[in-house]
Length: 352
Image 1 (cartoon, one colour):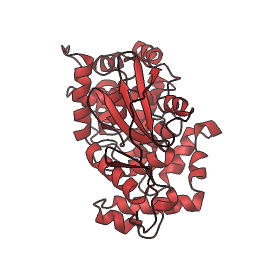
Image 2: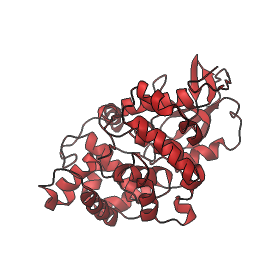
Image 3: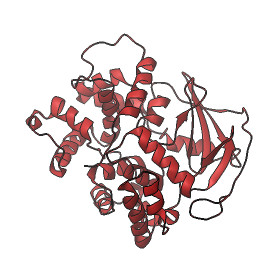
Image 4: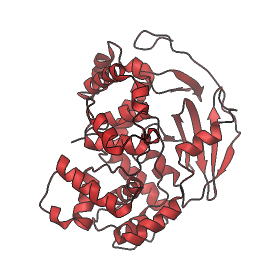
């Protein structure tokens, strides 16, 4: 089959089976719907109901399902029996970090966070592929989750490698930087409705090739002893990446769990609950972004970006900026179901 760049795409057809594997994961440590479809990754869809989701990461198509005590998973395609799958999934969900332990810390120093946690629970920060995360958040500029997901899907269908076919649906890996740097990419994306983001994507891919591609990006990771401010500063030099998008990338792909993306929602919470001196401030300038993120980082500590994600979800689940002043009678699962719908309709992590 020929893709829109005129290149051959490899097709691997598989028939889905029923074998599911288990990882111990309590509901308080993981709320699958909020974590997968709450504005971090844009490649997960709910299938068959009952908290079952299908998506792509690490070059694999996954089906995930949750119950009260365990996460069930299945990999489709030729890597189905890869013994590394459990480790890859655990790393993706940062299973080594106890959310319960950190919630106690955040709640002890911040009553506003404690109220937020009563509204939404089990939100985890995904450990995502740097290339996919970077280009997905370029798509997030002045956008909502539904449209971002559609754009990411088009990127994969137009320029990515086909992985497998499940129930007559084709699944694609995320494209490489090299494929997004091809000559006709910007034109194809403009025709597909990407608008000004088409130029950002194409030009960022070309710039990354000049800098060293994925190797250059991975050298920004915290594990390489790179500092958060320097990694963030280097990302902002790329087309289409401002302070908020850079912080999303640092938080979700580069290991800087202290990074706090200050979008409209977090700014509103900071103004209402933490920094009343910002009451007359209407927009998030780079200076205000730095003031808010520094304040919250000092308050919440080295995993402040994760605490921010909980507060972000709670803000969207509650029109009251004071966060959950009224007691809610519905179960957490029911609230989280409504939350996912609100998130999908909301503008998320847009760049100033």
